[in-house]
Length: 251
Image (cartoon, rainbow, N blue to C red):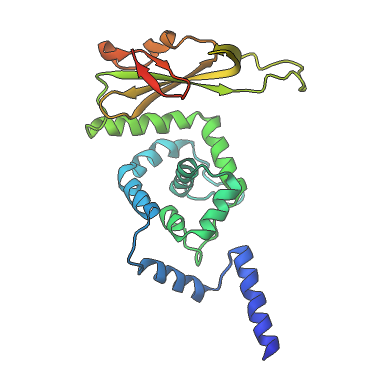
C-alpha cells in the first residue's frame, strides 16, 4: 500500500510538471470549471473579446499567406495561433510564459480552443515562429487595419478628429557590437534635460472614442507635427505635446 501511494504521488507530480494529466482528471477539471458560479475579470474580458474581435474576418485576411503544411508536420490551425498571439499581447507574456499560462488556466485554454484530451498546448517555439511569420509578411499592420475598419463599420470609431500622441522607444546607444556602429535608423533627441536615443512612435487617437487608429514609427528626432499628415483626421486634427508622464495634452 505504501508503495502504491508513493507511485500515485509520483505520477501526480509528473503530471503537474508536464501538463499531461490523465484524461479522467482533465474532463473533471473542465466540468468543474464550467460549473463554477463566479466569473472572474479574466473570464469577462475574454468573453467580451470573443464577441468584439472579428476572428473569421482576420483569418480570411491571413489565410493566403499561412503555410499549407504540404511538407513535414501540419501547422497548428491559423485561428488558434491568432488567438494565442492576441492573448500574448493582451497579457504581456513571453513565449515560454504563454505556454505555461495555457497549461495553468482553463480560461485561456477555452479561449484558444485547446482541449488537452485532444491536443497539447503549442510550444513556445511555435508561438515565436508565428510571431516572426507575422512580422516577415508585415501582417501585424493588416490585423490593425482590419480591426480599425470593423470599428468604423460599427460606428465605434469616428475619424472626425484625431489626437496625436508620441512616445520614445529607447534603443541601445552603444557601439560595442559586431558592426561597431549604432543603428542608422535610430537618432538621439532631447526631452527636458535628458538625451534619449532610439525611435519615436507617433500615435493617432480618435477624439470621440479614445481608440488608437494609427501608429507610425520614425527616428526619435522627428518632430511630432511632421507626422500630422500621416494620421487621418482631416480638419479635426489636433496637435499634442507630450508631458513627462507620457500623457498627451491637446493644444
